[in-house]
Amino acid sequence: MTWSESNPAAQERLDRAFQALSDPVRRAIIARLSTGPATVNELAEPFAITTQAVSRHIRVLEEAGLVTRSRDAQRRPVHLRAGALEELTSWIDRYRLIHEQRFRTLDTVLGDLAHADTSTHQNAKKE
Image (tube, rainbow, N blue to C red):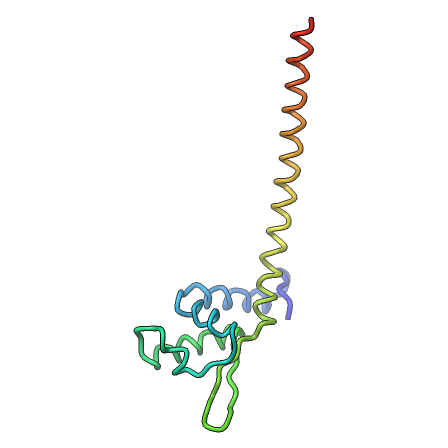
């Protein structure tokens, strides 16, 4: 799954993922899952909200393709889909790199202007 601007389905996945990550509880759940799978009860521990509320947050993350659930006997651990986060990072990096290159170009131009200005002042003093 890649994020392509020309693909409406990819744009929809991207929108859902960013909307899911807009909530601080869901971001905290993602952060916790980055250390390994956890059950809903384990994910609910640090929050002052019900396990039902955490389950709703997990459902949103699941619909966004950021997490999955599995069955392990009586447990239903939630797993982070690291690949989905890598895709988001790729999308962000593409624009970050474009802007970094623009800033490097601007730095070069400003450096050249400063050097030219210094040279002009030095030549004026010699005359």
